[in-house]
Amino acid sequence: METRGAVSKEVLVGLLEEARERTRFLLKGISREDLLAQHDPIMSPPIWDYGHIGNYEELWLLKEAHGRELSDRELYDMYDASLHPREERPSLNLLMRDDADVYLDAVRRTVLETLEKADLDSDDPLLRSGFVYNMILQHEAQHNETLLQTFGLMRGRGYRPESLVELPKGSTPYGEMVHVPGGEFVMGTDDRAWALDNERNAHAVDVPGFLLDKTPVTNAAYAAFIEDGGYTNRELWDGAGWEYIKEENIAAPKHWYQPEPHSWWTVRFGFDEPVDPNGPVVHVSWFEADAYARWAGKRLPTEAEWEKAASWDPTTGTKRLYPWGDEAPRGGDGRANLDALAFRPAPVGAYPDGASAYGALGMVGDVWEWTASDFRAYPGFEAFPYREYSEVFFGPDFKMLRGGSWATRPWAVRNTFRNWDYPIRRQLFVGFRCAKDA
Image (cartoon, rainbow, N blue to C red; front, side):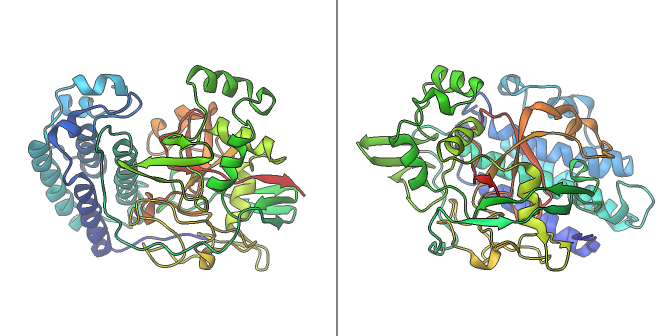
């Protein structure tokens, strides 16, 4: 079974420090007013995310792993996401930026002291193979992406990052499909160093043969759906989706607008720019993805179909950790657009070296991809280390997303990683690809 495996204490120290540097880099230049503001009712004030990153690290790397605490109960309660819904967070007595900096630094110093003495070969499942440290790295990475979602909702001039890499040009026109033959594959993983509880356990799934879009759906293809009356054709829409788009007066992806007929523009981090016809469509809800797929005579892939197309190597009968193999991605390495380096998706087909064994492109990076599946537990699921990470969300209310986006940090994504959200969500860096029965 594929696994990223344990890493040394020295590597963990480097990863923890780099993760904090990135968080602070993203917050650089954000005004005090914007740090404290709630830019959308579905998002927290950025300063809450920052304090929560430090408190979550204290909770798991000090209190739970080593029995040490720096904070009182009030601080734990304030940054407990399950105690305070987002609408309450602006009214909390949150740590301001300078105090939060001091707090996060104090937590980190103590974390590094305890890491020196930690037994990563312990029978304790939190410490074994460094699981709890890897969990914290992924948690901070997830909040980096959440912060970028929030910054994308800022009004006025907005957040204006500078691209750190030049994206390659796309080379694959949208419309091609790859064939994934029927048969069993291994879904999920038994890894306990990096994988989170909802990714386990590994289990065989028999998937009938299907066709899958070689790339995510492009802006040009989605614009054709709009121009053909996709948002006004009731027959294309799930019942709840139809009610949603009518109630919210939605007629295009979030951030799109049309200054003149057949000319689509978007607002990206405060910049107005023409929609790239070859880029993957982004900021669409599950309902919009589902309606487009129906318009195109296709459907959304199931979560099992997505994972098989991304991970299974039919030649060797083995599972890959990433579409291209088991080597972990690095930002700008030519196989995927990850790590918030470009601050936008690349044109589809821009990373041929990142192809899966079946020839599907862009399955990791650029945009998260909606699937047809609800969030369900795998056979043998056990909540770890707490129920609120996954178990309380299981059921039909949440749809599955796969693959990561341009804003996802490399260690927070893999073929087995499962993300989920409400089908109405559009602030996510999310698109989709379609499937058909073979």
